[in-house]
Image 1 (cartoon, rainbow, N blue to C red):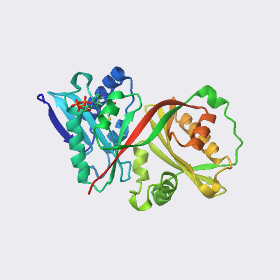
Image 2: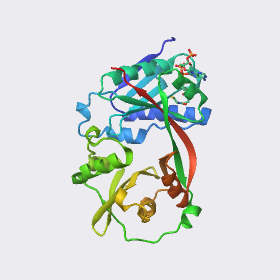
Image 3: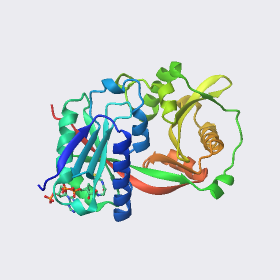
Image 4: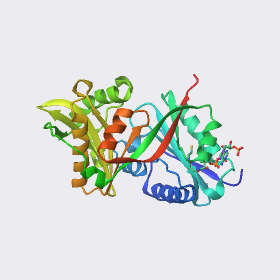
Length: 299
Ligand SMILES: CC(C)(COP(=O)(O)OP(=O)(O)OC[C@H]1O[C@@H](n2cnc3c(N)ncnc32)[C@H](O)[C@@H]1OP(=O)(O)O)[C@@H](O)C(=O)NCCC(=O)NCCS
């Protein structure tokens, strides 16, 4: 391989953020594909109180002189499955850069308790899929990103049941984890409890949905640079089928609009017909598809 140097960082600082954002722009223009790097979210981690004690490394980079030419980031979203996504500068492809970065990521994975790793690639990225084929991963699922169309949202029908959104605090962390295990199947014992106050500093606002004082669901709203994201939305099973999911979604959109979001998006499992139908009926349209491939650790 040419004279590249590889460097691993624990967290994303402002300089690395700038370099990765620049590389992301170049790749997006060149390939017309999307990446899911969560850079803003990662940058905010820099201010986390436990930053100096972080042992694990999440940022894997390759440099030619002082130019960043390859990057892979790890994200665990508080769970035990690692999500891995990255890119290589168009002028530096097919030279083994990504292969080398990925071997460093694998080494890091071996040091962690995570049994699974998910590799992400835009469905339209032929190179991404070809690379993934060289690993021993198997297809897991596809997620759509959906974007709100304001004209469609204005026509969304609603009959209010009186749902109230209360901003969550750290005392709600166990309830949030309990609901996540119901909606997304991640065992309660495998989840790190969310530091909700810290999440707020990072632009993530968690809300508990209440009906007549009883908890019926939750949602996480993210706002950064005018981009509003809706995540982790769910209604507890015994309260489903009563229009509460729809009301929670519409309230979430309104909250993000109040916070001056000029673009609102969410991600949904392509097989989740119920959620897809709900989002479409509230004015969301499919934007792109991200494929997830799973690797299992051999012990
Ligand atoms: C996918 C991507 C990261 C590959 O980077 P790279 O540094 O060129 O990859 P490597 O040189 O390490 O390739 C390793 C192997 O992957 C496969 N591969 C990579 N690109 C390929 C392509 N365009 N066509 C076919 N196979 C390809 C090959 O098997 C290759 O080994 P080989 O060159 O010995 O045949 C790069 O094309 C990219 O940034 N694409 C846009 C972003 C993206 O789709 N990211 C998703 C990553 S999973």
